[in-house]
Length: 114
Length: 113
Image (cartoon, rainbow over all chains, first blue to last red; front, top):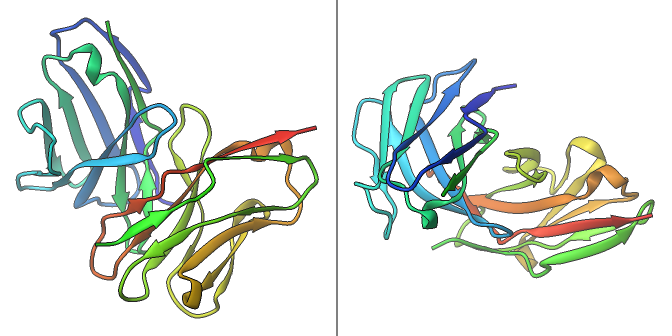
């Protein structure tokens, strides 16, 4: 089946630095990528939708300048957490919809800001 | 707007016992329904999905779910759980023509020997 590869799986960064998370669709073209954030023991909250070749669409309350999304090709979408702070520590997951109407998820990235 | 409710936050089941995880949705038309499983620190794996047709759908790992339109439910079942089934389970819904998934709050499944 379709695979979405997310990297890195874990990252620890210092407060004030930026972190980039990559999601690649390995055997299909992903014109759309969804980015979710998941707090401990909670559900997934959609942050933004990236579309290849156009600007990302952010959900209400999500700071677009804090969470920069780029979807430069049909197989790669990136999320950059800029000027990270401890409250940005979370589990971030990407997901790409497939032609079969289902979504394929990356493995997730555990971000810890110290 | 569509929404998903998973009434049970945490369920504990003995190994070998049967399991049912509840999911109710709110949507005007027939939605696309999904169940995903998430192991700690991992992404989500699709267990099964319902789009149309037979209301009883079979998934991977011995799971099945039944779509009941009259009850707006899509409960997940397994006749005999294994210790490896311990995980977080999410019910999700999306509408026709909209690729966004709306997730329930999840049910954490604990298996005891």
